[in-house]
Image 1 (cartoon, rainbow, N blue to C red):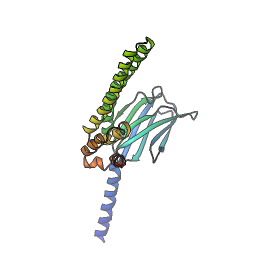
Image 2: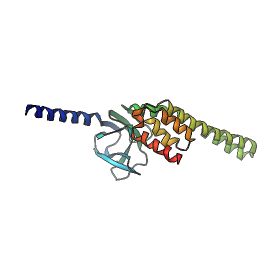
Image 3: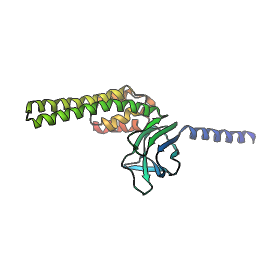
Image 4: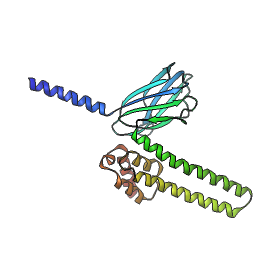
Length: 232
């Protein structure tokens, strides 16, 4: 009888620990928000699904606890007191850890500080690289429009070619970033979202460089499916 009781207690403890290990504890503050609803969402089968929400009434802080089997992209939305849903949202890599998001009502979706997620830290590094490409692209577009306005067709064509080469370089930058971060879920995620149309050999290279754990993750499996479909 004592052995049975001991076994039951052990199973309960193991179950509790396993559940806790897969939990994301999300906290944050939206400065300037007096009243509204914070929505936590993630991608379902084909669309965003609200998995939890919390009402804000005076205190701009919020907290969520949810199970995360594999690190994946979550989204924070804000519904104002009049019922309007803000167009902006905060995407962040959720994982089983304590994550904190600091933002404001005025700059919600554009100015936030996210801590506690290793994959999000990697995403921040990647976004810095992509911003440089975006800035350069805008610069080339501006110069190209000026060249067309001045009827300088030769310069306009040259600038257009530079922009096309920049796009190719941007794809390669995504591939290289993913290849160099094969131990993180962000690697297959970036290939799925930002480089799904690249040459198949690059998809194969990145997938082959993923660790076994990442290959078995949600995005790792999705990347494998993409490769299999491209091979058909």
